[in-house]
Length: 159
Image 1 (cartoon, helix red, strand yellow):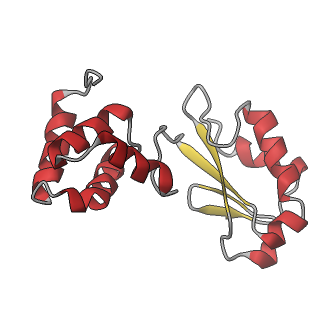
Image 2 (cartoon, rainbow, N blue to C red):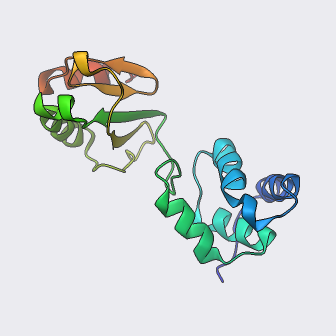
Image 3 (cartoon, rainbow, N blue to C red):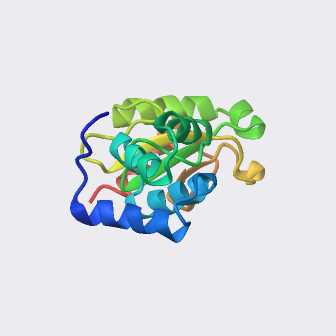
């Protein structure tokens, strides 16, 4: 088992969350949800400690984290970008917008820029089909996107 390299305050937080759910293995999703809400992602060390505290195999925790798209094992950027690849967005050119974002940010889907400013992901529908193609930066929706508009959207977040 790997050595857990978490700060004492993080260890105590995780132990507290587990205890609040009576250290029951059946509560693992609730525990992971609360821990990710605090730290932003679920590192291998965090998963190991949760497994230990709930007395369940690390493989079970990892299986849950890797199965549910809500959970992430990598830190998100300060400004998480999501590109809709639902049908309406896709047929109106969302893939070209995504390609331009990857080019300008220098990262792939699921990645975070080295400075931690941006992360890039895809989603299936934001229920804004009339504005297709759509991308979101945090909770802000940008509609009628084109590859040419990517630079100006990113400029809004470059200090």
